[in-house]
Amino acid sequence: MTAFTLDERLQRDGIPIASIGLCQLRLMNDRRWPWLILVPQRAGISEVYELTPLDQTMLTFETNMVATALKKVTGAEKINIGALGNIVRQLHVHIIARREGDPNWPGPVWGYGKAEPWPEQDHQAFASRILENL
Amino acid sequence: MTAFTLDERLQRDGIPIASIGLCQLRLMNDRRWPWLILVPQRAGISEVYELTPLDQTMLTFETNMVATALKKVTGAEKINIGALGNIVRQLHVHIIARREGDPNWPGPVWGYGKAEPWPEQDHQAFASRILENL
Image (tube, rainbow over all chains, first blue to last red; front, side, top):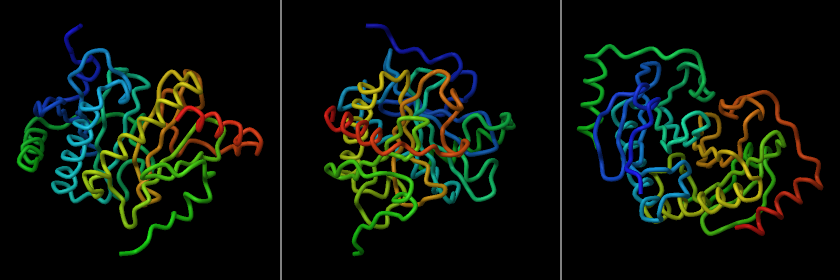
């Protein structure tokens, strides 16, 4: 069995926040939307159904814990959750806070325009607020 | 407590296939992609974390069962799963079969172009193949 290693593109596009039970929690380095991702630390998985039933349940639990914290911290109108993986095949779940009038609202965030990196201090402050609310 | 009634737009955009444990399974009436949705039959829910823990687990189970069947029937390269709800607030989970070169690949399907309705016979044949593989 191969050990889990984070995909290079996921590594480049995001900032690590924490390792929770199953997943690495990361903040996408794009301040246009409050945008978190969860990466199950399991090697060779690209679809949720390839995880064991227990891991699937863990992923659901962690996704909803993060979604609840994101809603609380941002006061967002809607949380968007998605596992696409058309570009990066390593399984990862997007959890994004959306509000009316944000970039591409009410359309999806994926593939829209160009990322705007967070200023260092801001992303650390945001990550701290998420962690406090997990 | 209000009874569950299916959102009008979800009703208009899709074709019912089956009622499985928690959810209604529907086929989106857009043959550009094999595109299913699951609607938990619970009133007043717009985020997954608003479901009870048991219902969350059921939704995960049903989502992965449908994703597995969709992969098997279509031989898709990637399954896309998403719960957005920016337009229709009633909780619904999209499960979509994607392949290289399909419309908007590798971008998301939501908000892209105009739906192309299925011919009646084709959607019935497709729905039957999904049901046989659940």
